[in-house]
Length: 313
Ligand code: TXA
Ligand code: MG
Image: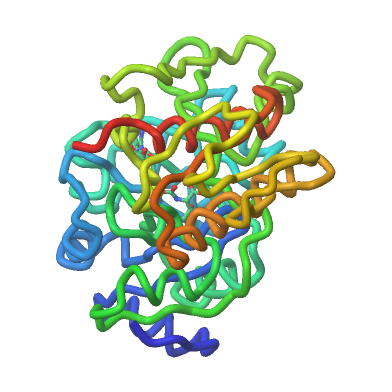
């Protein structure tokens, strides 16, 4: 992969059917022209992603989104309230939807999002069409929140990385299905459930965190995995464990990284993937993780950590 800051070059690469990783406020995405079957197929290949796992389509306006999918009143309200932002809406594909069928992995629905990152939006403007982008990491591995993570994860790939700095939120978007009568949260993420319920009080939490049956098709149990095995809810790490701390940590363990010394969940989300990457770089043998409160952004953090700790296939 090659790093660039040239948006025009990146947009041209997308038009030519190439892959361009770009920053969003959540994580880096590995982007391709959503209407080009070959380009979409190249994403699955580059990531080693199972073909049953559909992709999120990124657009730059609510109007563009509504041309691709059919919005219920609830979907409209959520889009109005939270776009651009860390929210993905799953809606039925519109009758004349131009997005590659491969992107929705054979489903009749489509996941749509308007990112809140100036450079991502400039890229979407310059490209002038929908861009599919899964998180820019090899399938099952840790998501990327810095350009260096993408460069390492896809070292041998010929694509581009549009350098947009570090991602401000650090965990992926919250996915809400707007297919049924009531909207349902399929994946906890950067937009917290309490905020969604302000707009849609009947929104369901439909997460099955401890099952291997995926709800969003890509929500496989083992995911976001660092090289070392992960042990959760650890108050005091063993001597041979690296420690991912949260809040005040009284450990003498030299391999300690603290998600947020002050116990701030937003700061912890922003640090989560970068610190797991750091443990990979350090080559640690085992990782113990401190308990994280299951509130607000803590839900998304704990969801990622549970998958990082799950038995590997
Ligand atoms: O923050 C994010 O959402 C990032 C940035 C780049 O936008 N993208 C991201 O993509 O996290 P990815 O591919 O890592 O995760 C997309 C998730 C998968 O779990 C997939 O199964 C689900 O979205 N998904 C996509 N289309 C869907 C659909 N039609 N119905 C249900 N789930 C869907
Ligand atoms: Mg991902």
